[in-house]
Length: 224
Image (spheres, rainbow, N blue to C red):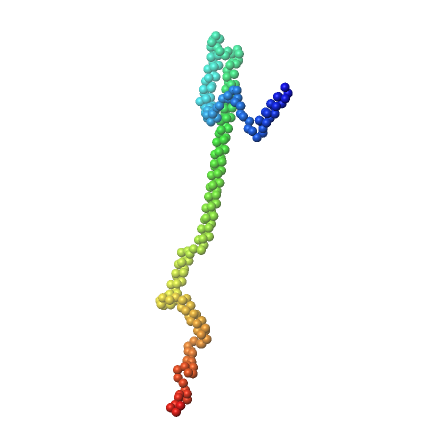
C-alpha cells in the first residue's frame, strides 16, 4: 500500500514544477464587479450634493419633522417615541455619517488624481515655454551680434559724403583722388623696376657685327 502512494506523490511532484504555471481555479462564489469610474462619479455627485445649502435645508426639515411627529403626535402612531430618546433617528444619522465619510474621501481622492494630472501637464507646458524662451533669447543675441557687422544708415551717409568731397576736390573729373594717387604710386614702382630715372630714355644698342651689313674692308673685289 505504501508503494502506490509514494508513486502518486512522485508523479504529482514531477507534474507540478517551478517552471510550469499554476492553473487558476475558479472561486466558488463570484465576486461582484463594480465599475470604478461609475462608482466614483456617483460618489462625487453625492459629495457635491452634501456640500450644498439645499442638502442642509432638506436635512434640517427632515429632522424637525421627525422630532415633531414623535413628540406631539399620539403615542399610538409614534414610531420613534421620545421615551426611547429617538433611538431610530440616532441610528439613521449614524448610518448616514458612516457612508458619507468614505464617499467624501473617495471623491477627494479622485479630485487629487485629477489635480496631479493637471499639475504634470502644467509643469510640462512650463518646461516647453522655458525652452522656447531660452531659444528665442539665443536667437535675439545672435541677431544682435550679426547686426554689428551690418552697415548702418549713418555709416553709408558718411562714406557717400567723403566720396562727394573727394570728387569736388578733383574738380569734377570723375576720378577720385585716391585712385589717382594709386596710379601715381604704381607708375613710380614700374620705373624703379626698369632701373632708369624718370624722364631719361635708354640709348639704342648697336646691332651686332654681321647681322645686316659688313665693314668696307671685308667686301670681295674683282681680283679675288
